[in-house]
Image (cartoon, rainbow, N blue to C red; front, side, top):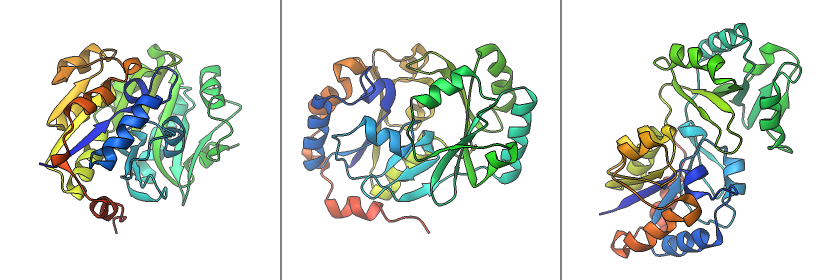
Length: 287
């Protein structure tokens, strides 16, 4: 029975230094050569995810931005995507600005870019951006209308929890929202993506396109809950949130112990083998 193995990155596949270890790279690379169907689903962009996983050579699509964009990890080609309508993005931006929350807005116009008002963003947001520079997506703008140029797919707001929480409650049913501390800085992030977008939805699309019958997931955060619910088996690392551990099939070791790689090494068998041609067929963009 063909299985797709799908891992979260930060706090799960990545160690605390925000990189995959040489051991994890070696294990996954060797197992993919034997037929392991492996990928990851992350809140990161394709660009920052590839930097963090340098050394991995899995040749199947990668789920980025919490399921809004899925890319071929060889060519970088966009395979499928979910965007806000212009009306949705405009109305959400207006409410954020009315509440003196100045977001980073991610959009696509043939290439990805993230926009923000440099004179308005707070120190937390500037610190978040500074860790990503230089970045070809970086696009500071002067007017709020410019934040909505292109097809918008992601809003990131960084501020005090007390300031963000009412907006999370307001939009959690209308859109797919996350409110949680950033894993490295501890600053609270309120992130909003289209209602139809999620790690789970993107994972199920991959599962279908690859002809897999089962989905096994690994994660650490509450933004992995929908993925765990969609999976046939789900494993939380020991450093995961208690809520995710409750939803898991079982709890494994920590991210700093390369727990996902050890689990795959112990449980993967080559009777799940998938051919290179089957994987490349999955890389064909949807029309």
